[in-house]
Length: 181
Image (cartoon, rainbow, N blue to C red; front, side):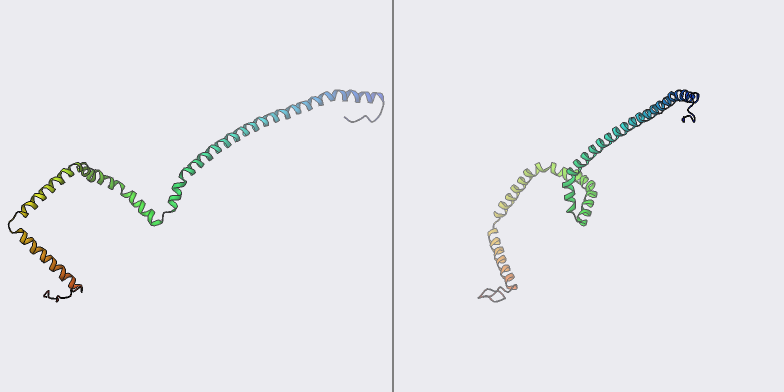
C-alpha cells in the first residue's frame, strides 16, 4: 500500500489500518511461498539422493565389471601372445586340424586302441618267432654241403662288390676290368 497523500489523521488512520490488515495476509502469502519452495527443495533433494545412490551402484558395478575384464585379460594374455606368433598359413592348418579331430578320434578308438590292447601278446609272439627262426637256422646249418654253398655265396658277394667298385672307377691294382689277374 502506498503512503497517504495527505497527512490528515483520518487518512493516516485509514492507511495504517489498511496496512496493518494487509501485512499479515502478505506475511502468510510469503510463508506459503516459502513453504512451497522448501517442499520443492526437499523433493529435489530426495530425487538427487536417489540419483546419487543409483550412480554409486553403477560405479560399483562398473568396478566389478572392470575387475572381471582385467582378470580375463590377464588370464588370456599368454594365449593372445601365442596367437600373435601364428602366421595365416599356420592358423589355417590349425583350423584344418581341428576340423579333422572327429575323424582322428574315431580312428584312434576303432583302429589304434584295439591294437594297443593286444601289445601285451606281441612280446611272447615275437619270442616264439625268434625261436622258430633259430630252429630253422640250425636245421639249414645241418644240411650236408651247406658250408660249401655258403662259402661260394660269400665269394660271389665279394666279386659283386669288386664289380660295383669297378663300375665306380675304383679298380684295384693288379686286376683288369674283366676280373682276371
